[in-house]
Every structure is written in C-alpha cells, then in structure tokens.
Image (cartoon, rainbow, N blue to C red; front, side):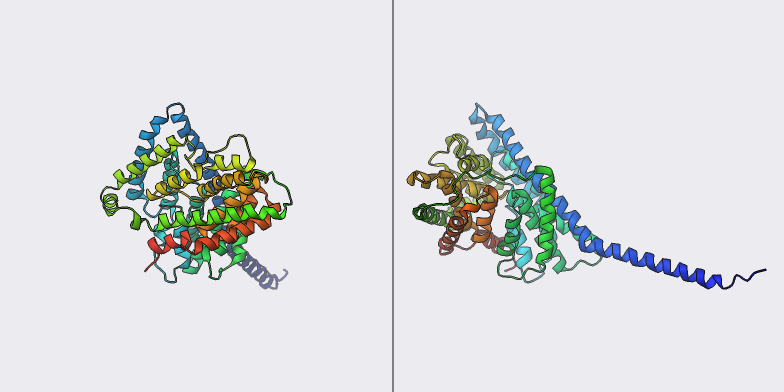
Length: 448
C-alpha cells in the first residue's frame, strides 16, 4: 500500500497559501474601499443631489409663478405665510441648516480647535432641512439660489460617509467636508475648475489643503455624474461676444468693476452690520416673535416682487440668462437694486438658501446699466464682466468668481477682462468690508 504521508505537508502548505492569499485580498479590497470607494460613492451621491436640487428649485419657482399668474396679489398672502412656516420648521427641527451653508463649511475647516459641533452642522437631519425647507422657501417666492445649499448638501453627505471608516479623525472629517463642498458647487454649476479654486481660495483661504488630489478626484467623479444626468451644458448658455476687443473696451470693464465693487461692499455691510442700522426695537421684535418677523419680511419681498412685475422672485437665473444671451426680454433699470433688497430681506429670515445665483443676477443687472452707457460694445460681454465683478466684491474670492462665470458662459475670449474686473472689484470691496462668508462664519459658527 503506497505511503501518502508526503502529500499531507504539501496539502497543508497549499491551504495555508490560499488562506493567506484570501486575507491579503480582503485587506486589499478593504483598503481600496476606504481609500477610494467611500469617496467615489459619496461624491456620486453629491453629484446626483446637486443636479436634482437645482432642477427642483426651478420647478418650485414655476409652481409659485403659476399660482400668482394673473393674480399677483396672492403673493401678499403666499409669501408671508410660507416664510413664517419655513422659519418655524427651521427653528424647531433644522437649526444649523440656515443660510447658504458655506459659512458652516468654513467654520468646520478653519477653526483651529475641535469645537465638536460638526454633527450639528452636517448630518442627515441638516441634509433633509436644507433640501426640504430650501425648496419650500423658493416655493414661497423668496430670493434664494440653489448653489450655496448644494455646498452644504455635499458637505453633509460626505460627513456621513465617515461612518464607513473604523476610526474617523478630525482631519478625516475635515477632508470629507471639503471634498463634499467642492463637489457640490462643481456639480451644481457644471464648473469643475471653479470647484477646485473654491476649495482653495474660499473654503481654506490662507491654509494648507490637506490633500488636494482627493479634492480633484471628488470633483471629477461628481462632475461625471452631473454630466450623465444633465449633459454637458453651459449654466447660462453660450456667450455671444467677439473673441477680441479694442483697447477702449477697458472703459466699460473699469466702470463695471468700480460700480460692482462698491455695490458688493454695500451689500456686505448691510448684511453683516444689520444691527447698526436696523432699529433696536425691530431687533427685539425679531427675537421675541420670529414667526411674525419672518412673515413681515416675506410681505416686503412680495411687495417688491409685485412692484417689479415679478422680476425679483427666486434666484434670478432666467433674468441673468436673458441678459447674457441678449434675448429680447430685458429687465428694468431698477432690477439690480430691487433684487439686492429682496435678497437682503430673504437672508434676514435665516432660512436655508444661497447667494451665488442671486448675486450673479444682480451683477448682470448692473451690466445692463453699463451696456447702455457704452452702447458700442456688445451687451453680453459687459454683462459677464459685471457678473464677475459683483460676485467677486461679495465673496472677495476673485479667482473663483472669474472662473465660475467663464465656465458658465464659455467666455474664454474674455479671460483678461474678467480677471481684471474680478481683481478690481474684490480690492475695492476689501477696503470697506471683510469677505462675506468668512465673516458670517466667524460671527455665528466659530468659537470666540
């Protein structure tokens, strides 16, 4: 009978090798899931939500406009009631979801201490409130845009993805928040390069990005998802302007930069220093009766909307788009001022809502002014320059502002004018006020 003993050690060796191979494979899969899979899944969700949220914003605004079509007086009831209800819901269940959400992201990233408050500002609860209450506010006709909230939505989604890591650290949390915020902006605007600059210039500002490669990968994945859903679109459409301009075009560029620089500084001062110019009795009333305060602000927004023929409802996307494309319908001369007041009142409600799109629309309105003063130059080019100018004055992030608009309208032929207007407006605004988002973050969300 043959001896089979030599085969046993060989069999045990094969089994040991297979077990080791399986363990190594499992470890490799787990490591790759933590290094790449969690990130890709998270930013893919961000891309879907950002695109859908932007669509839903337009859809609910159309519903509101249908409600008041031919009977604008209904807004005097709808907007105050919706505003008061939204204020109550936000204060009752969704504290931390107020505003655009960008200040909350800045506070989470820049505060040198671990405040332990990330869970209050980034969670599924905040995500629900940001989407639900934000859409409800636009359904009531308030002047809000979807892009800032998309930043907060992205940060909240990625913050929740930390649960897949065995031992999440504060550094990891901040990296996930940063990636989600940048991906949210990129997907909402379809502006991937602006997403990278936004992370560097606005969110971390003067601080070292922990891992810029991870940010870029996140933006790419979110962008691919956005492309799959919405296609490769231009946010405001193709800019119809010459590729080259004469030297005299510097005059309208300078005029737009100066005008928007001062206008942006004025808006920042009115919003950040509201306690200095709003009567103290009204401030006490706001604290004691927030629902009545919200209803009163909603009533003022409704009055402005009716007085302007409906031009100030919502984000102002359609108005800005018509001005960029030089379509037949033009806004009134009062549009940028009325829109600025409406945006200011809407933000005083403390409801979830963004400033990006309304700010661009206000800049487009100022561009309409400048184009009438310099009629020999094409309106779309001047409008694009003014859009950059006002946004840069408000945010004081000139690189992000000019790249955002350039990608939105495919304005590569206007690189130099856009850059010049952005830098000049930002510098003028900086003489009078600090950057808006950073100032709100320090006032409301960072430890003193």
